[in-house]
Image (tube, rainbow, N blue to C red; front, side):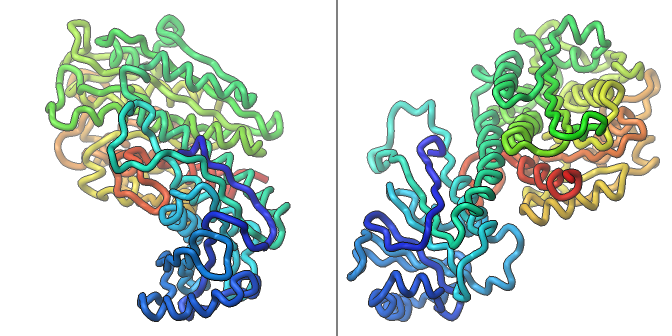
Length: 497
């Protein structure tokens, strides 16, 4: 639905049609503009609230059909709870919750007002962001609808604010981020026969329209660079591997970039160490880290972020062909370090190893974050509410934690230590690609750390949060687009001037 969803910011005025959404606190108090627009209908709200036991709890709703003295078809009163207790992401969640209650209407007007007066422009923009994210659906491959499915409608949401011009400025920034989240969700939701490595690279190259510099490395270029670990993962597939480097230059020419690296395994069978058949269809989402990086680069470019940024993604398909790599193989990575392959299903770290080394040596970033659906072990440890955070830099880890709390894309720091690093030492090579049953997410991060040198670096294991995670007020899709808002907030709060 995001394609048919339009947001406008206007002044406080009684709407002539559609659905009117107003807010009240936990004492059923409404703002002065809201009371003036409702007129006599305010008394109806009080009576209906008593009958329905509506208390104004945050996100709760009271629905009044064909309200007298108003021209609209429905009046929806939404609770704000105690706004003084809101977390930074609550307005976004509230906007999503509101859209979930009224999204079937073609015209929706939302009065962005607290009991004490109009919401500020930034809060109003956050409401609109939440609604936009909730509006997302992915049904482009459905040719038949269920009998009870309502016809799809274009939706116009008008947010009434005190200062529409200021809300539009904030709204434009949120729209850029929302577009990035939607792009990431779309990429993850696409079937693997449509989004294989070459096709993914072509999708990423569309960022040229936003003046993002694009470099695509094909197999020949990667062989010249010595990206043998990445190429080994993809050698069993009929689809060639690719690496895509995206550059956004919004800062000073002398500023070192911030780098974001994503794992892009477009489909992961496990290779020779093949996965069980049950649930294997979900492995089309093993490129969610790369999807996030593409979505993030879209967001940074669309809102013209005042930084220099590198987005790098390694795109492969891990298949059990006769040419596929085997357990026992030894590959030489781009860094010159050698890796013994113990399990071909531990492939993501091999892809990232070469891309991380390439970014560190060529672009010399001031900080680097990678994202990967890397291990099932992180889901055992943290479930699906937090991503695992591993870092060699305390300040970067602290900033990611703060950005996660602000966006509700939360992270939890996990350990790195020499004792864990020893678990990936190999008898025959510099290291092996698994460290055994215990601490699997930690030993995977230890593996990656061997390729970043002294660059401030953080690794986000997003296996639990990127796909199939619990649905929220702002996402009802299998793919969450997790990480775009988190990393955009990291950039905005800690790196932009």
